[in-house]
Image 1 (tube, rainbow, N blue to C red):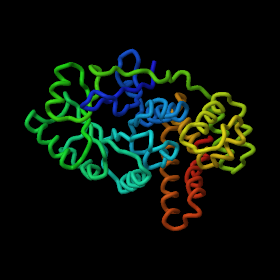
Image 2: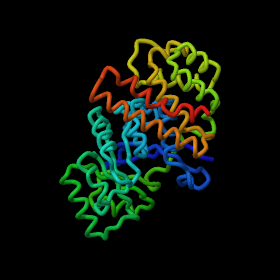
Image 3: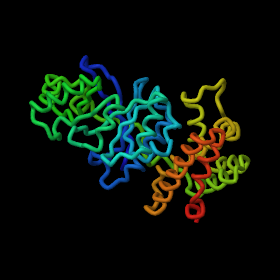
Image 4: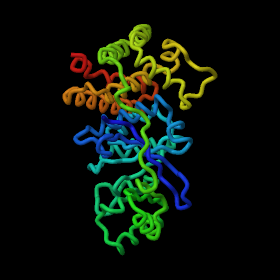
Length: 328
């Protein structure tokens, strides 16, 4: 059974500074073997939008493990930088598209953390100037004691917050503290706590595809009609629109008002999060969604440069460019 968990990250005074949210196999206590990172991130974001990151983190910043595709596809438009941080977990070659996406998110106020940081990872070094935090595994890193002290010293001079993870014993904690790490994470300090059982996240595949098709036609009435027939999607949408992320004068209690308030682009992004987090997706379907997200992001960025008033339409055009394949 897979569950979404949160784990506290402590400062040198022993107080909780942040949380990290991630997917865990309840039986092994580890990341589910062979599980797609994109789907894992989608599930975590689905849970955060449903419950509210301010509630999950008790007002503290909540870091989410994120593969690059989410950044390139503007999916963090659904979350608030006040409550959510981005932890990059892929050691893939950086692209200009990814770096531009990171710059955009930083301008919006998001904090970035590089997971499993190391100066030997040449491709990731351009991120160092952009990120706010780095995370180093106390047990699995390429440095000896002297080199690790030097790395910490350099990172401090660059004013990066330095998080150490995998603190499993008192000895691990004392060693990390003496080395000069600023933040500490591991089961010695706090075991992961379940936020939500992923089996409770349920809705119909047909609903996702029908909403997708209705948004393509820009038919708000049809979008509302389809969502209202699925209790799971209705519940998630209303939880999302009533979250602290959206400033509003009242609570929304019906789907039509929620859809009109959000607009079709945000509803589309919300539906994609559900589609990517859903347990039904075949590998071929996931690849189509990824391609559609990339095209949507590219269209949005081109419109930002050449015709800002077309930004929303460009995103939707890219999103629906593979609609025949996705809808079968």
